[in-house]
Length: 207
Image 1 (spheres, rainbow, N blue to C red):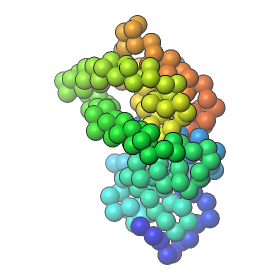
Image 2 (image 1 turned 45 degrees about the vertical axis):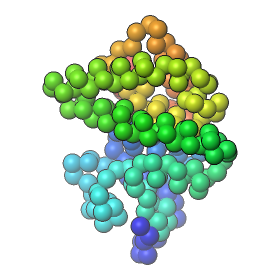
Image 3 (image 1 turned 30 degrees about the vertical axis):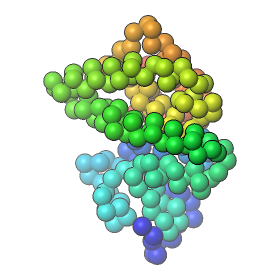
Image 4 (image 1 turned 135 degrees about the vertical axis):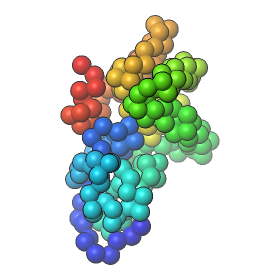
């Protein structure tokens, strides 16, 4: 969507304060070192300007001057192309395709379970078990490289790290043999950019 009125001079991000998908975009922005205006959104009562900007009324929604971008994966790839340094995707097509497939798997199989767990009840117990099993089945992927399927931080890590950060608060406890996942998380969490990506609500998810 391209806007004509209300032209802006800086990036504006409409984001929930505790949302794995919004956190994903904020982590991309932090990795790029990009300054932006943060507008906190209650998804149950989105502000009127977001209703005007995004036909789906969803977050995250990014406004860059006269352009409005929504859908998390589209926002992340737009930011990586808009601010090319440091790059968050490899150069060669094979590696890019591999990472994109990894992100698709997260989006379809892992990230939806976060919302199911947060909803509570018996479905949450099932989702918690499924997420734990999915992560344990993916241990070889965490061992394949310093970051997720890549020697450098990528958009895949920006999708995955917010999930790993939330595991304790979601009640997803990993066994000792899954230390490689915890090591992966700590490697990213120590980065100052990750700290900048967190809201106060998200900081409180880990003591």
